[in-house]
Length: 300
Image (tube, rainbow, N blue to C red):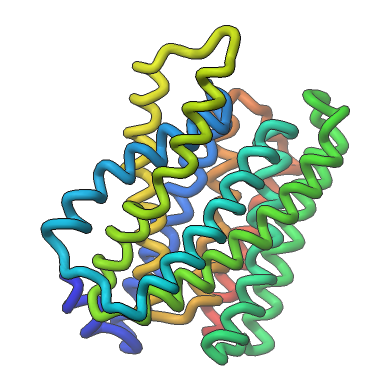
């Protein structure tokens, strides 16, 4: 399977596969956000997810797939640090603000930083039409965030802090997107990178979550929490794996922008699952996000 992905790098067919993978990652990433924001404390959910995907990755990393080349260990070390900062920032943002406010800001900030990172690391340059698409997408995302900020009444005392934390989280999303794309391109087998990343990335947040759970006066039951963690671990594998494979076989910046259509799916999930209201103005702004992604793709 890894050899097949390598064989389609830089081809038109590879581009089509990358587009499909990026959109698939968008749907799953939105669902993953709902999982973390939903029933349990975001820190506990994140720890359960990380423990689950670490355990799932262990046999593949240690016994099934080829081991990483020596130069990969430094790349893994930096990737783990970036992801730890990202996850702490995301959990903090979700703790302070409503999902439909925080999530659009995170996703709206990251395409701009990701495009810059793709230019610096891979010399990728968007054309004028694609920048129009990015501007349209970002306008829709930030318009959605501003609308939510004005109308959502839940947690307004911490909403401004949540917005700033969401901006920082978006910057970290761009950082891990570009660095992980560099990492998956630096190894012969892309699935080796994915397995070892999940294996190395999982333990710390699991420990933090366990200490937080133990310090609670009324901690949630372990069974439902871990059930959500296992589900989240599977979703993380599919979502993160899809976007990284897309960046391996096609342009990093374009894949990163297409993934931000996750905001469209986040609004849908927020309405269906979290019972957060979606009105006509928000639907219009969501349509701008989708239009921006279409323009980026057509301008490629």
